[in-house]
Image (cartoon, rainbow, N blue to C red; front, side, top):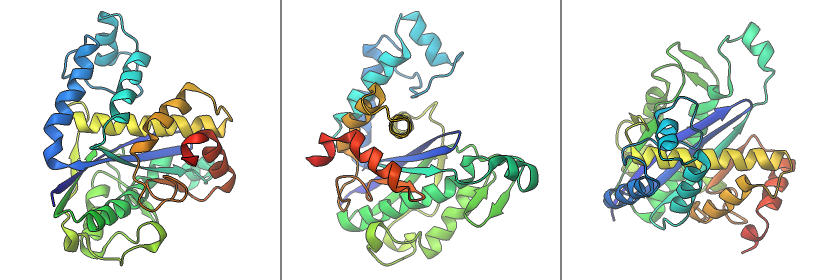
Length: 287
């Protein structure tokens, strides 16, 4: 079998962090990148421009859009259309919900406390599912590429919290030597990632210059918008429709129903929100 590559990006704001991954065979990457760049040029944008789900004011992409009289929503729509039609891509998303009293934590525990404290924990749940995919699909190797995580330079560790400039690399080293835990439903024994073909270090990239990381950013952004809309009972919003469009690309080997518990993780457990999310997808989950 081929070699699996996984590009990972995240979207964190307020009390929600989404860590999303895009999986594909290495040989498929050049064609995907070329067609992704065609999406940009079709909108009148330079092929090297960075695509982001949320384009901040003053960002070069927003300036490029203004020059060709396009909007960021048009860019989002075309990006969603592209990823929804890619049968050579598989998605996984992990949604982490903040449970702490942040004002207390910032005052008494860690002044830079934020939901991003749990980035490495969310990454672990994603890697568990990637490891399961490697075993079940019989890939010979796997490389993980993360967009540069905003974890600061000052180290801080407390149980599941891992912060600092080397937090991801150090945590991955533990998974490489000792395993990242079991996948959905406790499938497969806990084994070191080195034993199932993972490369010895996670790679850190920058979506500014990497088209595949831009696609991962879109998946993270769409997922975050969908969960936010469901939490606010906006089940018929445009953001929900965007997620419906890409939901068929999520890993779904074991989830019941559909992507839940397999290509999508909600942590910690929240039965009320779980039902809202299922209702928001409606017919998609009943297929």
